[in-house]
Amino acid sequence: EELRRSHITPSMTDGYDCYQNALAERINGILKGEFLIYKCNNGKDLKQLIVDSINTYNNRRPHLSLNYKTPNFIHNKKPVKLNSQV
Image (cartoon, rainbow, N blue to C red; front, side, top):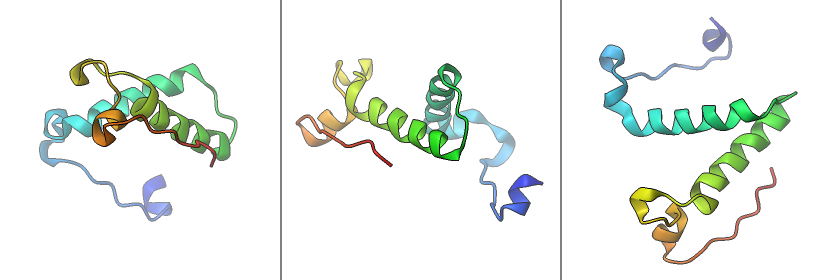
């Protein structure tokens, strides 16, 4: 109901199988883990938390599958400094 009121069309894989969209499920799990640590009092705080979480995932947190390098390091072959202000 809330999605309809907000004019948002849900997008799902057929059969509700999480394995059909493993990347999105992985990212959702990471974000949920980050959000359980903090309490957001408003939309602005939530938006900043999302920006900070994405920045941390891509620039600060080494990944085992990338030989303990960050995604942006691998993508750019050099460290990236980002401003996480919204």
